[in-house]
Length: 100
Image 1 (cartoon, rainbow, N blue to C red):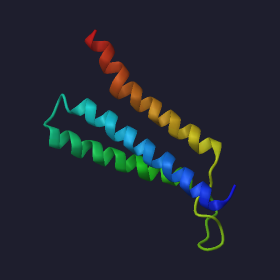
Image 2: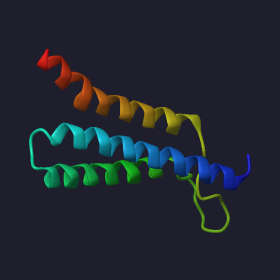
Image 3: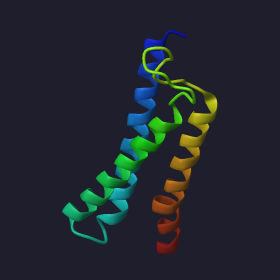
Image 4: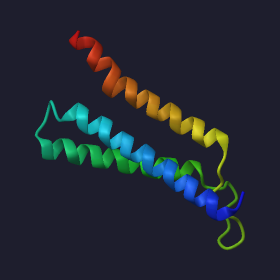
């Protein structure tokens, strides 16, 4: 696959993971705190998700101008899916079960 397409796919995956993180965290904390504080907590958490997921796609032996900036691999995608699943369990599934 061409490097430009890999960059686009990685960017979409990383931004989608960050947005889903922001949404889950904001929805969880908006019932407990003021809307502004819930949004700030969600933005910080989504920023960490953005950074950590970008680090997953970085090549292990990166050299500027020699190697590609990102490597699209299945292990990184699976790790991001696991992280999102754990966040879903903590912020959506478990709190909803306690209310019932």
